[in-house]
Length: 447
Image: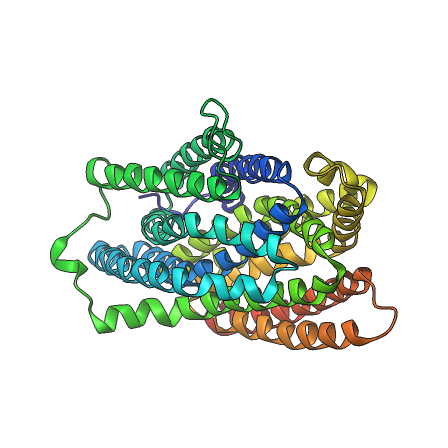
């Protein structure tokens, strides 16, 4: 356990963020390597994997419920020096993780085909997406155990073990991708199914490694069989904080599915271009997410210790660091967005869509970073409802107008990307305004 209630705020923030960012760099490498091999299979494969990957948003919604609730409650308990409560929350989250994993396994195999049939541009795209998703569903189910344990460590101020496991996962994935996708060394190429299987194998090994760490090396929170059985009051505590962030990710699934539906008439090349551009964008977001993920336990422990000035300083320094990183990436994307997407396709039509998407959408990178930081601060203060409210407003401002724009003559993909920039900027402003009110109410400074 690391006490974050004393010492330099920026130093704590950087010390927490750097290992996370380092692990996320490896995660980015995996995303890009995986995308590179899938791109060799053609536009339909890229479009199918991109559409299928959107299902991960639903799983991330459920893992957010578990992870955010666990991290926030444990961080507050650590700030209060209440180890018993931290252990109770951890073990309840482990039991909850098992139930969610079963739900994903059953629901995933029942509904995946219907979803891909609705959003896939053609039969080849749908088939590629199904092959990928059917092999990736076990890995998605195992994510819950990984999130429960990683969030508990983050709440106690420990991030290096999670980073090491994440790097292990990525290295395994990178090694398995060419073997399973392209058939290197075996002569048996599984195609998009290999991409899903590689991820599932790597996640399973990561779960085993993290369980070993908790069993042998972790001293503050432990597995206790008598604490794992569900307790309604404790599950309610996790859900009260975790459900709004989970619902946010569910809304992101709806927004992304809306984009795939709207651009469906433009063909598989456009869906492939959007899939490549959005994957690269997700990789770009990782440094800002590392800062936001670090701000949450730092502010959370100080909330538990009733130190509002340090809570506010955490927000200030997170904004300075996160916005600086995202502004730098925005400038590069405006300069040469094509360099970021060209390694993944040689098709001129796909490349044009991906580069235009990234160049246009980069105008909201700073706003997106602010949204991540605001979300982390809401988690630290134990009230995540404002984040859900701002996400719901974007569903209204983006999804409805996007469907209307698509019906107008002369509609172009660029119009959709511009609409996204405008709505994310509005959402960031609204989120900052709500955060200001929460800070006044929950972390007021002395007169």
